[in-house]
Image (cartoon, rainbow, N blue to C red):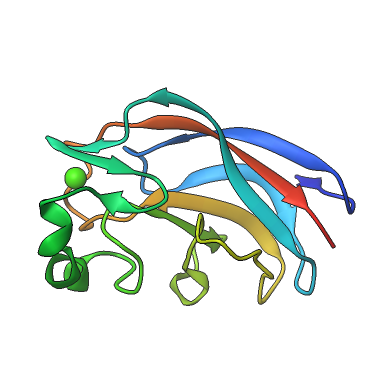
Length: 136
Ligand SMILES: [Ca+2]
């Protein structure tokens, strides 16, 4: 597993079909990381709902999204937005591409996934390269 020094970055592939995408990066509590999409390989669509890894479902679906997300794996993150985590620990789930930098609450591997209902991953599409930079 790779650890990032301050100023160092690493890129890995993320697939919306996967329950967890393993980054191979060991994050450390107290460090500060920044996440960005460096390349969109395949459109980020939940069945026929066009979406983005940052904002999730587009209009008009985004209007009903606050109710739908209550049954999603991360109920505090928009439907089909990218969720970050440490290992596979639900208590660490966060909105990965929100504006602010992220400080992990504990050490472990960074993982991520498209926020969805647990049994609804078979109709997912979307692949991207995610870049993680340690900024402090
Ligand atoms: Ca789905």
